[in-house]
Amino acid sequence: MKVTIWFTSSTYSYITSINAGWMGLRPACPMVGTW
Image (tube, rainbow, N blue to C red):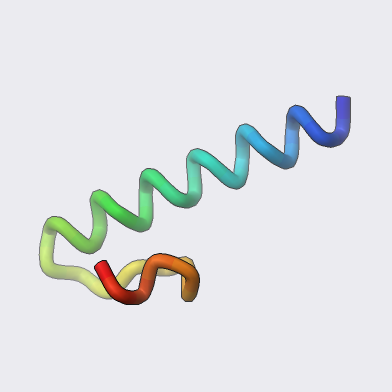
């Protein structure tokens, strides 16, 4: 259960970071800082 919640929130944060990057903003997640 905890793994699923972590994976879901982690994926959501990743997608949000990419979307922010596409809008010209700095991604919140350091792992996608190259986007």
